[in-house]
Image (cartoon, rainbow, N blue to C red; front, side, top):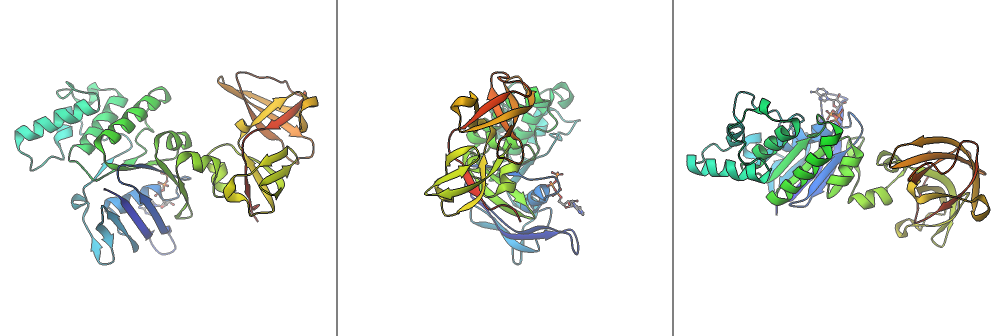
Length: 348
Ligand SMILES: Nc1ncnc2c1ncn2[C@@H]1O[C@H](COP(=O)(O)OP(=O)(O)OP(=O)(O)O)[C@@H](O)[C@H]1O
């Protein structure tokens, strides 16, 4: 299988400018990994090291057991069997769609090349578009051609660098789903760089969160969201509600009541209890473990975020309420918690 293994990679752009600092990342063959992290944390740099445009000062990169970079080894990009889908498709404007897709098929006999182009255009849902010029396509169609071009040479690994960021939000979800389906059908391993948490969680098999030149956590989306490694990761991959709590026998006691803890966190005695806003419910104050006063309401259409100053808590908390705004400013409300929480050491 085309497993990607990045081990102990160190890269800098000069003295004192270390960007990747012993980074490890493993992606199983055929899986899509999203690399998520704050601006400037080194996401693109990681792609450049994997693709071979940048030399790592230490560490190694292997795909399917073949060392692409490592001590004494640095294969040039064209020998790595890696394709890249850049931010805005970057199609050659003077070449037709078919010739764009055929671009990486050098050394392939003419008939086989034409068949492969047709096959790739069918795969991305653009069969019959081969004669068009890039400017005759929508942004989403151009991105799909870029994907067809990337997949045509049958790469072991596809690197996607924020490939949806130029698309408007209505198109984005649909193109994202298309690209995901095409990658699955093609069977290549893929690494998707994004700064969009929703995109990472909804598209990837695993999500790696980068911080300080390393992977802070790499996990399947549900685990990352529900059991983040620390408060920083928790806040980075979604809205987080932190309340102080003490733990005993797998249950945390907090100002919001008693909350069961996820199994992996059961050894800590006290710290910050993490909940997601959708785990909280507004109820009648007489039927709740916790009570408070509404201090803010933000309506988003599909749900609303209601901010409540809970008795006994220093800071107000956000509660996501589906289907409208159930309480107004200044109203006394009850708060109920559902599901499990995680307990974390409070940051120093
Ligand atoms: N060619 C370069 N020369 C010097 N420094 C660079 C160069 N390219 C990137 N950097 C620096 O390296 C760090 C990581 O950059 P990189 O582009 O990998 O971040 P990123 O996570 O992809 O950011 P973004 O999300 O903003 O695109 C940044 O501090 C950036 O300023």
